[in-house]
Length: 430
Image (cartoon, rainbow, N blue to C red; front, side, top):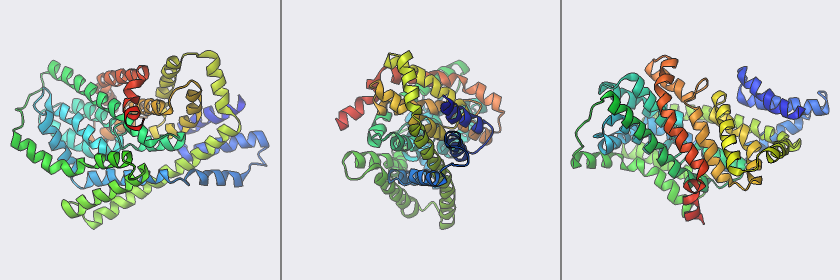
């Protein structure tokens, strides 16, 4: 029990004190080793070996590729093209640009795989367009923040790659399993947009003419083929998820430089620099989590948690509901990526003992952590949107509150009805 307190509670305290995630994981692991072996006998060589082992993974090569794809999409003017496609599709509905906002995020999700990339790139465009059309800033910001959480759900998804690597689960299966929940997520948000739009009397625009729709599709078709290349390539066996990320990156470079010619060499070098910084920070967290996971296994902390749950919770559905609440609470204070590294090695062995498919649980975990991105006090996406709009944080949270309802309802659906999640993986991958 002492080891569990040091490992988990100690880590939470370090994170709340503002210690960087990687250092907090390494420090809490070293504290356990020092507590059990003596602080003068901490195995520094083992710590260095385990952290290095954590990033020695072919699968993790997909992360910098997806990060670079997201930045390219935002910098090459592709966000505008995606937004125009969404506008011609649903712009005529009541509260049209709110629906456009959600649909554009669903389309962009298939390219960036990141909620923050969606909020910071496409989100700025969406908020400006909605404000120019007379929508209140609060509503525009709330829709944008909520819809940005679709980014890591609809494949490709950086959190899905991380979870698959940590849980030793099929990334292709997680990608497929996320599609239907992502669509439900978008439809739920659009339903809430419709309700609010009718109550507030937001405007309705004329339906786009066929020529406008055709033009928008023509301009946006090439970037929207990116997720198709990834999914079809993986399912056909032509390449692995990691190789798919590189193929998709090469495709994005071709359309950015040779087709649209919308990005300069100077801009591309700046994108590379920013992506390298993001990748280094993320891989450092992965290295720290590898040591943390090894210490968890070494001192059988996971077995301790599993034995406790097995003695108190007998029903798999009750376990999933309990774990979803626990993950949501963690997501209030820890960003989604560090939370994945913290919780995956702890919880996956537990759910497996209950006969729960790790792919199903992975979608639940990622979905729950995405809600945390728009939930105070940490809410990374909320802070990104606040920076764009200049709104007060309290005002932004107040406007976002109604959109928690569809997100939580979809979460309950994917927990209570596993077939919603597992239908496509079972159908395609047998």
